[in-house]
Length: 100
Length: 100
DNA sequence: TACTTACATTGACAATCATCGATATGAGGA
DNA sequence: TCCTCATATCGATGATTGTCAATGTAAGTA
Image (cartoon, rainbow over all chains, first blue to last red; front, side, top):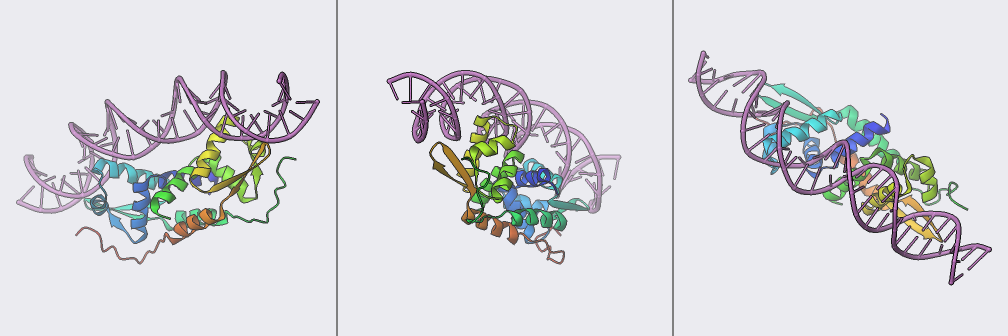
């Protein structure tokens, strides 16, 4: 998982509606109509957001009859978490790459 | 740290240049001129990106004479990591909130 | 004081984005 | 077959974004 993939995931999470959708999915699978109830957006807008979440790999969907169910993708989520976890802050680090 | 703050941080990380800047800062403090060397962007563009990274709280800066040094903010980074870490995927979760 | 250096701000522009209403698709059900 | 329901796609629009050249600012230097 390279930094382009990560940037894509971050872009998907940069919209506050989409971030809340992901939080809902973190509690378990949801169908589109239940997601739609939870937000004050129209159905085309939800569909657009779900497409973006799926395209970055963070969300998977499955269809059952007329309904579409969304859930987080464990593999992508793991890769993303690993990247974020590896960002570090350490007061003691050398500032070797500075001026003067 | 609410989900608006997190969305702002994700937006800051959604640009691939900014994501790489954060990775560089994860290795330690850097001054603006060293960051500028590492990317193929102009100085105003770097300045713009650093402003966005600072405004979401992820990056701190300090000025020494003419030079400006950037580093990750440990506190914000911790809050962000915690949020991401709490996103979970569990195959066994109830799909209680679904249709039919 | 005048000059240089490091960085920020401004203004412009093309590209991307979130959103919506309208419409299409496709799966049941009558 | 015709209708309804759940969702996707299309086309348009106003807002935001990344980028740059030009310019401003503020610190050090001669």
